[in-house]
Image (cartoon, rainbow, N blue to C red):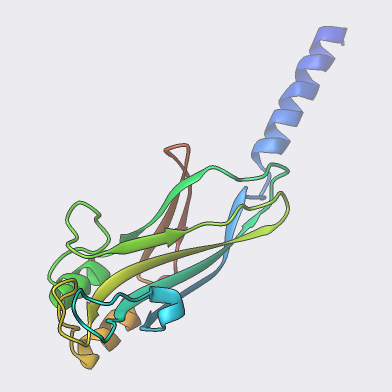
Length: 178
């Protein structure tokens, strides 16, 4: 066997072994969804000329992602939920629009990121405002408790999508198939 053949076989073997590797760059370790009006999470505002502040109620997601690579992830541009059909139907029936589509939603949404160090974990949050109990021009009336409970029960029926430098870097099902 000549030297070139040995090099080609070694490179081919290295390529096959690296492509068969089961380690993923990123791994979703936790996904939670709650409906909250905790002011420390959702914020508040006081309408002009009013004394009482208005605290909205949000659908609040919290995700923990593990970075299995040797590279820090620092340039997360956006995280978003890609709802499945059932979640989308529940959201549209409860809220009247697709809160997950920024262009279609008439409500406020917020996102929070943390850097994910190499071989470490990062936390990400998404808030989608659903309405407020107090009458306000800023927020629609809050849906019924039954509708909110149905939304909470289905909130993890979708996929988390992460974008870095405007390119998709990860896509995670939020819960196993039912």
